[in-house]
Amino acid sequence: PRPGPPQTQKPPKQKADDVLVAPSGAQALAQASTACILDELGGALRYYTCAPPAAALVCASVAAPSTAAFASESPRTPPEGVADYIEAELEAPGPGTFERLLALMRRESIDFSLLGPHPPCRTSEDSVRVRLEGGWEGVTLHSGAKAMLLRAPGTEERWILTVLPADKKLSWRKVRALKGKATRMATEEEVARVAGCLPGAVPPFAAAFPAPAECMLDEQMPQTMNFNCGLRTRSIRMSRADYERIQSPEVVDIAE
Image 1 (tube, rainbow, N blue to C red):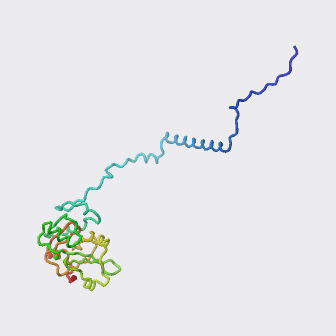
Image 2: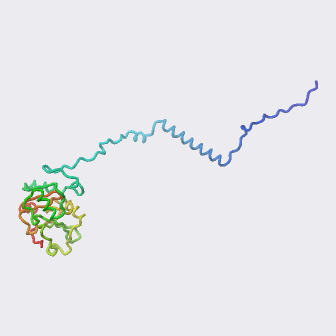
Image 3: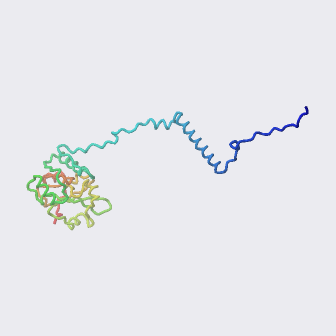
């Protein structure tokens, strides 16, 4: 038979799903971002499945702090033979001056009476009432030793503690004639820093202060002295003779 005409082979017909379409700009950007994220995730997985670096080992070896590290400090213990502190007495500036004063008097074997804790006294009148209510007899305004901290004039700090009967007023004329015209009352902040206590709690003992101060005692002070002793909630009674022996004040006329 006669051969027919040569047949040409047609390429297979492509399906719609097999057609490759070039991605648009937005699609290309999305594909690149996805590739970046997958790469970072792979790196993180490799890091945590391998041995950690030295820095990570150091951190891992640090133990968590124990609960004891956060425990509150134990309460401050008062001097021997003294009633426990109440919360108000532990507030700043604290009982430091009171403790120094007691230590000084015990070291010198001074005979004294201690009352407290009692209701806080800021004024001399409050002190008389509270001491009488606490059982002390013969307490008068005149027997109260009113202690006032002053600052003398000058560029350098110089402090003066004046002590006088509570029923008398400080004579600024007399004090300034002795210590300088610009002598003034100490501020509340200065009292806390120099005397170590709050106004109204200042004892007549500059020797118990955390900072140095001179001391002037009015000559009218009676032979029995009652005073707040570094805390508004504690009082001391003692003789003027013992007071002068320990403090050695300058005895002058400063009251009116």
